[in-house]
Length: 288
Image (spheres, rainbow, N blue to C red):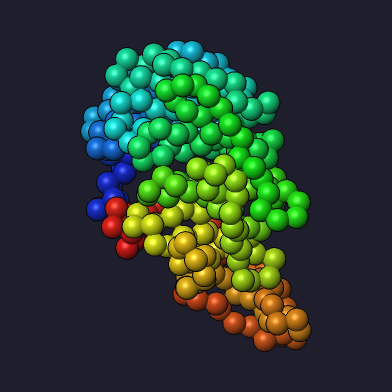
């Protein structure tokens, strides 16, 4: 990390602006709905709002000095939420930079936050393997039940959170967990889980498509998995690296330079990445 953030033109790939954070590493980003404003959070606990058209700094928000790990913008872009190492979630007024509400929701660091499309629920994941929801108006906090069968399903620190377009479901991914988990927010509990069909592969990041009909997961071996939603039936696998078939019928990744003459090799899907695929973003129409 170099303490900067950059704004890019996606059409021609030009670097439009360099946002200097004075050697304070950038750890979280959130973009306003119209793309005109950007919020950045840093390792040093700084929270800054920028003009994406000019690259100029609009203001710095004061109220926390702990490292910031997660940011999310409200659907109307009038407020945003931050999660930090002190386990406190803070709601900020976008126009003034003042704190609207803060609540200590976790004992450990908040690693991911998401907001439902109606702005009535904030979902937070933490390094302590818990997922909680906050009512931003009332300030009430509730924990989602991490069970939908025998034993808890959350195996490690929460890596990412996503929300369905209708706001009824959340999707979570955790470190060291091969699966992504689907949560019913109204019932407050886990209802399903998905996993890669490749041996030893794990889902690192997942989102629901804008039309709510597909669930897309990025995996450790560089695959993009597409499941039909809400049935959670695997429909397509994109990307991946070189694998060998195992006697059990599964597959194992072949490391570059390894002698694999004793096992049949194959490439599963169209090649895109050779290493962990940890994040992606979907276009508004869900086609890219």
